[in-house]
Length: 198
Image 1: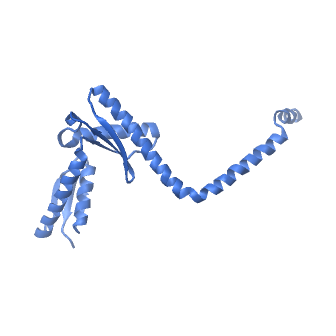
Image 2 (image 1 turned 90 degrees about the vertical axis):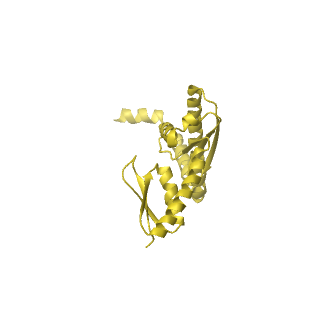
Image 3 (image 1 turned 30 degrees about the horizontal axis):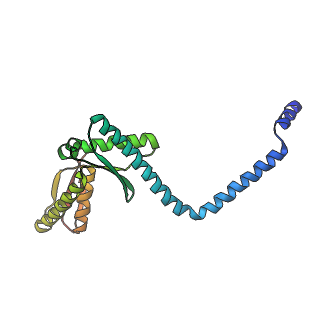
């Protein structure tokens, strides 16, 4: 046992231990100083992580465009609490598909690619050729007209099956009209039901 202590003391100098202890105190002091700016740092970290998600997604989509030999420019943005990656170009209809089905699949693949690199679930949104922006306008109008119809007739109205993106827009439009809506069913047949007030 004495041999082990001598061996240990020859490896570690007491002065080194004091310096390491002082360094540890400096780190603890720095952490306490940083606690005041945690809220601001949290917002900056959130923005930074969303920008990172956008960059990873843009790289992934750019690789897919290269493989498919499609031209398109990629724009990245942060809207609220999600990264938004938009692909704009003249020949991108095949990336949208019927009713945006291909776009939904590409978005899920892109989210998986981001998750694989970051280790955290991505809520990013992918738009191709302005499809989602146009669809958002159309769905908001549909939500308003269905809300008006339900208010007039007093009867609930069940809409066709929609993606989560589409249902959210309908729910928001119905809520703005002062009515209540719910989603029912299982994916991919989940749909919005609009109920009269009261």
